[in-house]
Image 1 (cartoon, rainbow, N blue to C red):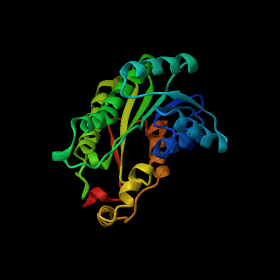
Image 2 (cartoon, rainbow, N blue to C red; image 1 turned 120 degrees about the vertical axis):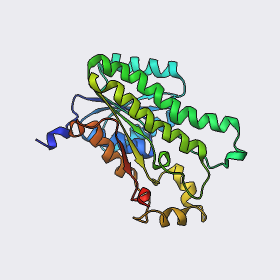
Image 3 (tube, one colour; image 1 turned 90 degrees about the vertical axis):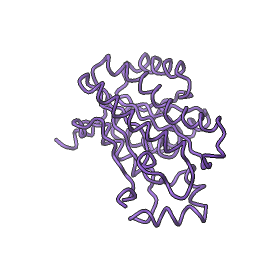
Length: 256
């Protein structure tokens, strides 16, 4: 009974930023559970690399080029995917960026870029794919937030990133409340520092990394599969009673 709830055969899953790092791990987890996976990436080379990585593991994936900051393109991609596959059941909003810039030195353009990708892009995707899920009466959306949407990180300055992820968390709850009685669940995952290309800059920084480890009870960063496994749970019927949740996966960081 319980393992059957993780069966995603005949389900269609879309992962933004699915060509590498956390997104690729999510794509693999969903594919292993039987889902048809579509990698949505702004960079065709990254998308191709992700598709090749999954193929090497025996999983096929479709690819769509997508800039999540362009709502018209997002709407068109959602329509095209549903037209091709007949449905969309799972959406993982993973695309995101981060910079470490003191607030008083931050350019307007940098603030807007982070908000545009990390928050606006999540809304455009939730809205576009959510419409199709609402029409079918079912679906699961998982937004990748961050523990940075709950606390202000130390020692690096990143007010725009933190604000964007806090926005993702409340957007998740808001959409969950609106759509709960129409069959669409919306949850978020709030990771700690995960070893990816984006966090490698901080891990290589002798000022940042020791502080990160000191402030984390487990005294380590996470790995992409440790987030993907939680995303898989939220995508499946195993989490059927969950909506509006922000699942913190942080090695204990927010305990202190």
